[in-house]
Amino acid sequence: MGKRPLTPTHVRFGSVDHNQR
Image 1 (cartoon, rainbow, N blue to C red):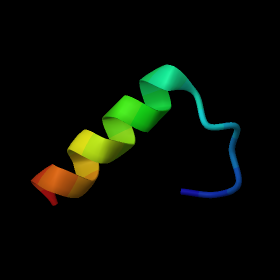
Image 2 (cartoon, one colour):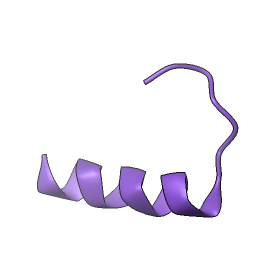
Image 3 (cartoon, rainbow, N blue to C red):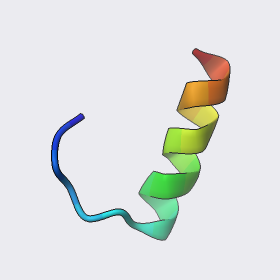
Image 4 (spheres, rainbow, N blue to C red):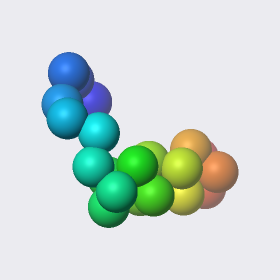
């Protein structure tokens, strides 16, 4: 992951990814 604009979809996916990982 790099410096990208935090979007509603990305933010939600990121949270899930962090929880799953």
